[in-house]
Image 1 (cartoon, one colour):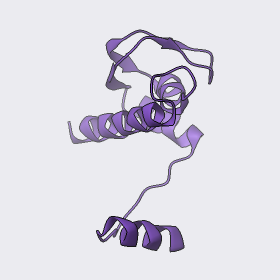
Image 2: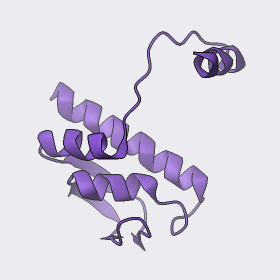
Image 3: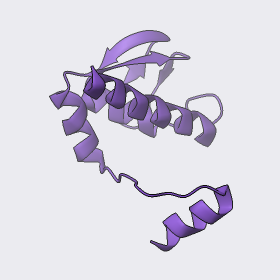
Image 4: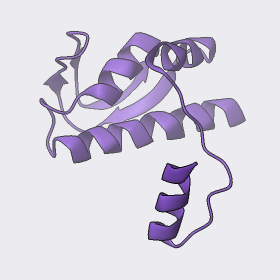
Length: 99
């Protein structure tokens, strides 16, 4: 609750809801949806899970989505690249649910 209040005050916007998803839950959600489409901006080999990704639009399963969302060492931008990947996965899950 304190973290939500601090972010809300810092950003100047009310936060009424948030979602917390653990690694295994992310994999399960993505797999239940039949995978999610993500446009990978650059090719790289992920240290987490030992997977490789080619640049371009592709359908990721749960294990791939988690590895993609966790990588920060082998992508441009480091933590910022990881944050972008995490946003892409969340947006892809939302698009798939709404479809």
